[in-house]
View 1 (cartoon, rainbow, N blue to C red):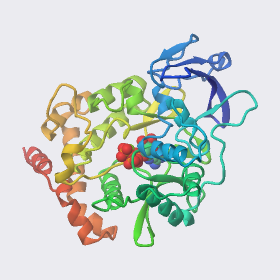
View 2 (view 1 turned 90 degrees about the vertical axis):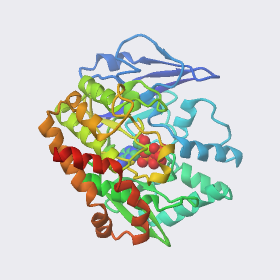
View 3 (view 1 turned 30 degrees about the horizontal axis):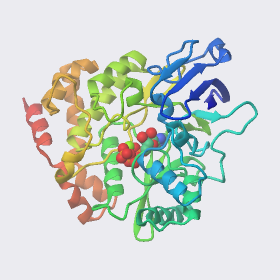
View 4 (view 1 turned 60 degrees about the horizontal axis):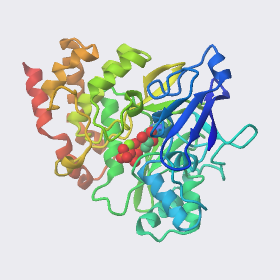
Length: 409
Ligand SMILES: Nc1ncnc2c1ncn2[C@@H]1O[C@H](COP(=O)(O)OP(=O)(O)OP(=O)(O)O)[C@@H](O)[C@H]1O
Ligand SMILES: [Mg+2]
């Protein structure tokens, strides 16, 4: 199979190259288009797995930058269920088929795919992205998926207009009242606590700690709450190229990587390197102090605003994890050289992020103050006392004590 790979850039949709995939197995090849390589503003779609050069490039698995705009556990589950209920005629068997099953308009990042010149971009958009007033219908459909009593209509709705995007949790693309694109993240029937409340609180604490985030809001839908988060890969209707840290590092998302390796990638491919290195260190200590333990390499992302230069995206998928659940998480270690990821190690490696000790202490102090204010911030967000109590052990933890001790020295 051969596919044209286009990218939306500077207000145009441009042919960047062609992707070839074997009928069976995961092997793929890619070649940049001649016209793309002749452009003065050409850039690599993924500088690590698809560097800019004219020859055919081969890989045993789908190139990271293309995988990043495809579905993850939640989307794959929907696609597989749609095959079972005969909403999709054929079971996708290659990773690229899963990417193509997602709606073109709402897919993450700026890549677009079609089978040849003049053909429509895949997957054809089947309708309009649901406005917020349809949240109740979307929530009902996601619950039906969990209870395994969904209809073909539910699947068409969630896979089509409500594009599942990436990640493991139930979610959908939605249109905000101001017309901007957003992600709605839904509760699951088997959640043991209000995950959306935790994410909303973590986003607020991150803002208070000086971390860049996008706007988020809690929307009450019946007795449930849905978290609606503005999309950072769209600006004034234009798409912005996106890459996960996993792709920039050329690592599988299951591989732990480390914050110091992300820092090295920022030095190599970054945009606003000095600021981003400080921002990354700030996010790292925030994740430690707020028990954001699921900070794996797909939960760090980069946006491209200048050709070939990748800047940190706003922070996303921040989830405080209570102590009892921490062991099961995919935490990104501070550094590849230290087994332990405490605050002392974070301070020790700060120079790899370009931070001198006084600056590192200043940033640490700001993050500690923000996390210590978790209960007041939660009350200001009108989260219920029971919900806040469920998160207490995420914020009141030994690392906060360690940070306070180190700051007193
Ligand atoms: N605000 C945003 N704007 C654009 N893309 C986003 C935004 N937030 C998340 N994404 C993209 O969507 C993907 C899924 O979102 P998110 O990580 O929040 O979901 P999740 O289901 O909680 O993930 P996980 O599997 O890590 O638990 C992310 O990996 C990222 O590529
Ligand atoms: Mg995620």
